Image (cartoon, rainbow, N blue to C red; front, side, top):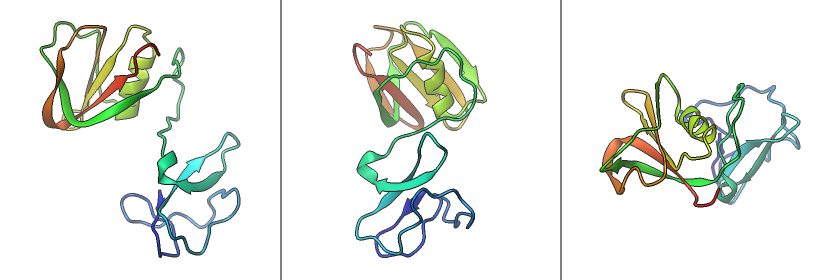
Length: 144
């Protein structure tokens, strides 16, 4: 959800307005000079923050998931693959990251947005990233 500068209402990414009974922590501001994004706190309340604090979140039971940090390479996929550690279909991009998070050895996860498939990779199983417009690749930060 975003709150665009100069506008009076937040909108979902598809352009629709959120329901009026959403659990806002401090209420929705009337105007803003900088773009804001909505975040959900631990109590389940929404608040708005500058988009430099943009984070992704995942709802559901993902037992064994470890907190991890990394970057997303939009439109890129691993090249020169030697081994796929895990593969799954029917996941979301965040579900693909969660699959990677269950394995301490996972170094990257590639999600194909066209086929809704996920592949995870261990250390030294790919050499670099190459362009592919239908793939988002999560690359885990070294040592985490």
